[in-house]
Length: 259
Image 1: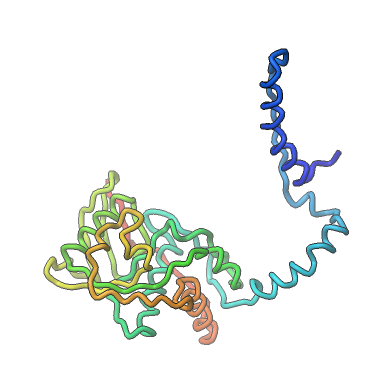
Image 2: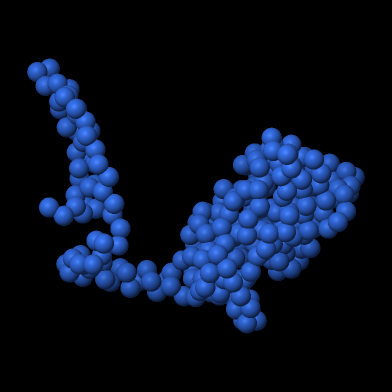
């Protein structure tokens, strides 16, 4: 019998039941356990099940109509990784870019890598692609930290091995997660100065180990759904598309690890 996803799921679900039944009868003894890996890949798409395809057709059409529209073009493959990555650079840059819409002029942006759940492939980028990248209900948020608290935030980011930081931020961290230096637009962080930050509400609450955000003041956190980070990312792709530009990102040394 040709293995199918349904058969695999049925066998997986049945295994615990069979083991339980066996344990309920003392005259049964487990002799051995064997397993093998069944790779479910494109080979199983060569011969479509006509009935299954007919069943999902109306749903597929509806999903594709929502997820399929193209928002813009990505100039290269972009993923999220530590200490610095293309997608980890792009998203905080977009948060800073969005500041103008809210009457804000952020000094920097921060986006957590844990909140980036997919990569972006070179070429056309669809609504569904961005939804994969930012599936959560996180909304843009602006707040102010003193230089002393910003340094504390950078220390916490260093401990995590890096996070998404916007253009102009340059932090140097040790291999064991200690902050060695921090610069913003070529200047050292002034402990007494105030810095405006664009981020997401999830981080503004002090999550993902970035508790320095809890000291934020003058918080601007719009609650409407349209302020979800995914829609802001989509708006950026649309604007670049309208200008005839592909969305690009570069590794700039925003987070450097020194031995």
